[in-house]
Amino acid sequence: MARTTDPDLAPHELRILVAVADTGGFSAAADALGVTQSAVSHSVRGSERKIGAVLFDRARTGARPTPAGEKAVAHARRILRLLQVLTAEAREAARPDAARGPLRIAAFRSAALHLLPPVLERLRARHPGIEPRVRIVREVGRGTAGEVADGKADIAIATLGGSVPPPPGLVASGLFDEPYALVHPEGHTDPRSLPLVDWAENCGSYTRRWWAAQDWIPAATVEAEDDGTVLSLVSAGHGMAIMPALSLTGAPEAVSVTDLGSDRPTRQVGYVTTSELARSAVVRAFVRELRATVPQGC
Image (tube, rainbow, N blue to C red):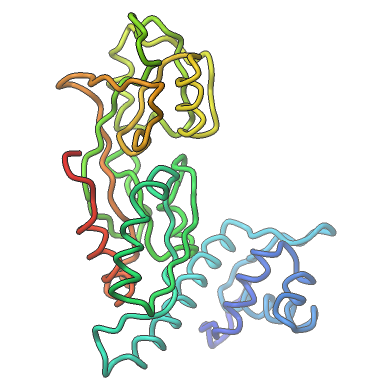
């Protein structure tokens, strides 16, 4: 596909690419943006000519990003977000401490439940102009970091230190090491003999070696959707589980938590953002409150 002499995409073209990806079709994108379908089609074709690649597979049922389109849409989201930050911070240049505007946060479930609430409470008290928007994402595959890479979040609470590094263009920083423990029904005399209750997010590359070395842990007989369901099943006497500390915050009285010893598995919890947004006032304010609120003793 031949390139045009001016390869730069305008903001309205970026918004159309994102709208087509989000809605799954040209007609739906036109409705969402309040323009005609022909305007959307014309804009996408123009963007494809400028980039020199087909960005969407067209079908009767809609439009789906090609691999090139996925890259383009991810960058479009991030550029549009930076334009928002540019406007907000330029307006507030005379008041550098008054961070304001939306802050899109991605977090895995236990972090959203037990780590974020006090952080957001402090953030609202010190920076009432910031508008947090929290998205809960399963920490499997690309996980929360993928939300930042795709431009859907400004910052993510993520598990770090695994075999898969953060996507290119992102920066990561650790907050604390989170230990795992054995969780079992209260009063059971031999909890290691119980069947294992597990969930998909529980075993990452940071704990896999420890799991493989434990000949007393059976294959999971029950697999749940999330850590809350695992705790509920354990408290009802259906088995034991190996769980990280955040998931055990506020555990029911019907369960006991047993330390796994000095060689217990741990995972590092930290945050991921883009190199550009790391310097923005809203992200810097959030990181300050996050570091001031991280659990002690993990």
